[in-house]
Image (tube, rainbow, N blue to C red; front, side, top):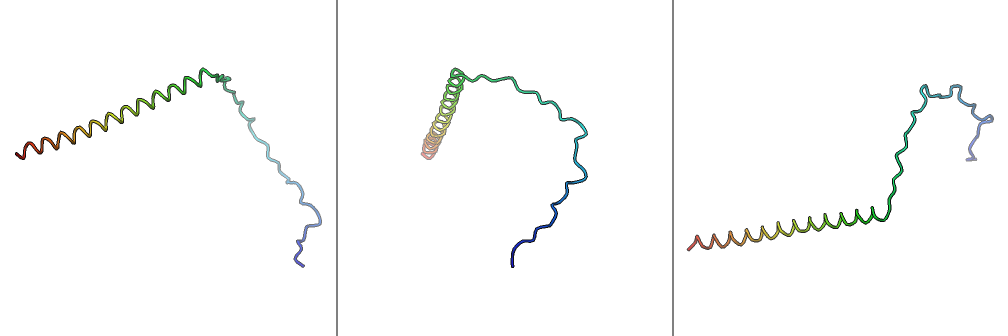
Amino acid sequence: MFLPKYPDNPTPPPAHTHAPADPAPVRRSLPPLSINTGTVAAVLVGGVVLTALLAAVAVTAISVAVAAVVLRSMLRDHHRR
């Protein structure tokens, strides 16, 4: 009752087959990369150093901001007297 009806003959192949006009360009391969433990260690050390520098800058900025707030409150208190 609800069975699909298939065609008697399979569909014929297309009359036109696509052929590229220009041949594909030759891809040049990249030179081989050699990644050894020294390279990995250097990258890790560089990452640790950069992270430490960023943390030092952040701590310095926070301490300068706290010092500015303290000095501001001290000077405001001094001008009130």
